[in-house]
Length: 401
Ligand code: NZQ
Ligand code: ZN
Image 1 (cartoon, rainbow, N blue to C red):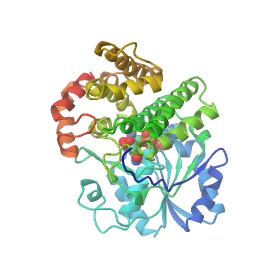
Image 2: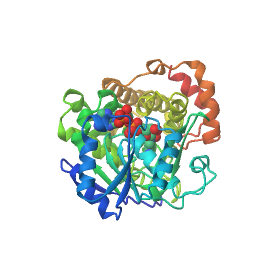
Image 3: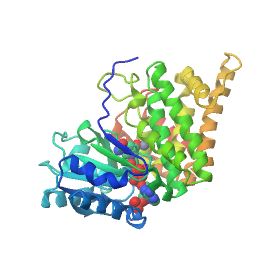
Image 4: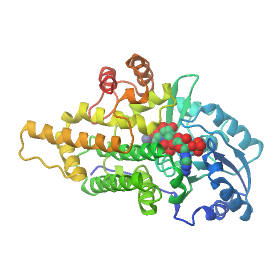
């Protein structure tokens, strides 16, 4: 087990009565005026936003609003949010939504007190030292931003999608009511489930050897999510299944699944190869849902790299899908590994995710553009399970068609 630091300072308020507690939770953080950030309309339409507003008002918390965050959020709206936050001297940023909204809230929170342009934090020119507190009401279990140290923002002008990391902007409180996810379209539920499974896999397939306690948590989360997702696909308002998915999405990305698996004490576990590859696709094509891109890329990456450490994949096959080899020959190992990867891909497809890039309306002509910005974003080689050159990245992209 490698050395690690694990910090998950978020306070989680979870369950059917959570939304009505938003105001008092925010007030307890000492904020009397907040910026309320939300997305393209679902929170307003479902009545969630009014419940949050009522709860804030009851607790004596004043608010200004910024709506319209799109999926794969763009830096221009973040800049607008920073202006609103400064003009109103808000003391906290409250995101009501999913990863796109919460990441926008985070970027506003560290952009508002900064003397530079917020993109400087993503291009690497500036480091976050000051940050307004962030809180969130989670509406889609997926990105795990409600407890993560990451913030991912797109810059359409530069055709880039970049992340930055910092414990300073992990949300102080996350309000999580699984009933608000009953209204999710099946496609978004499935994309979220795919994303959280990928967050676990990025850490599970790090270069570290077995870490039994962490590995068991990883595989247990994936098994629970698969079982709950199947239930939700038949019964969208199955509370316990929705609750399982919601909590799993948080544990998948608050770094619990990486404890002891990092290359060094400072480094998050894993090489994040599938995320690196996917972010280029949704940077160039913002209409591609992050999780749907991953549903294609993760199995393709697995097929490309498994030979670098077959034992790791055999453990995955056994502990997630109960598939065991009959002997130790290379042919049998290959059968078991490819069958486990196939089972994962079949599961993604069964809940409505695409199997290939054609299913996302993408064309092989676009690959060169993705590789170019991937090189700029990640350098070469990148990743850790089996470090990837840009030629490897191109081959993985092309295998997705
Ligand atoms: O915009 P509205 O109208 O709210 O609709 C949203 C959006 O269209 C809809 N939705 C959300 N909750 C709903 C709902 N519709 C009905 N009922 C509800 N309860 O779902 C759509 C997707 O929302 P979005 O926030 O984009 O989804 P997600 O949480 O998957 O976030 C994706 C973004 O997070 C980034 C991704 O790259 C992407 O930009 N990530 C952030 C990470 C982090 N901060 O730690 C890690 C991830 O790996 C990921 O990269
Ligand atoms: Zn993700």
